Length: 163
Image 1 (cartoon, helix red, strand yellow):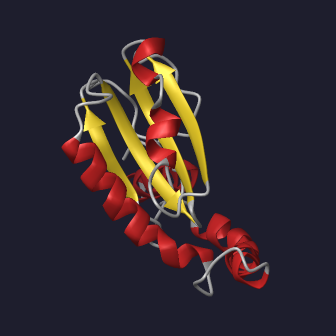
Image 2 (cartoon, rainbow, N blue to C red):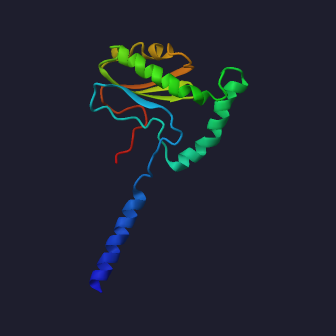
Image 3 (cartoon, rainbow, N blue to C red):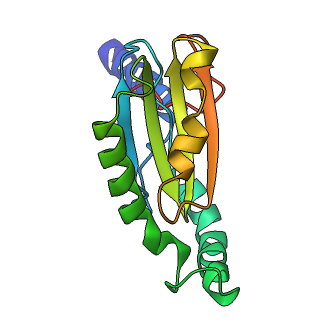
């Protein structure tokens, strides 16, 4: 009887512990998320386009509206702004591979509806100079949003949960 009570108590502890773990995150919408620099090893990996299932459900309707509003406003040739993202990511991957700029950094890019979010760490403020202009020169990029930390301190962006 005592072993059964201990076993039940242990199972309850495990169940409570599992309930407290963060729900898994996934790139539900398959938004391009690429690392283009990796010099600062201790730089926290951004959360990027990853979200929980609940967050994905909250975002789904607004993503549809935002994606098609570009075409309805005659600002996009394609019927949905998200249709540009894979080509933008491929262009950015190629441009970073061909350039030595921002070499002393760890940078990740998320591309969503022609917006490019650049997150990561640079060695100094000077090292980040010009990154928004560099990315904005990529065809079809509408907006660049940089969330970059100097060094590997506390980032100003959401980070990937530890597994």
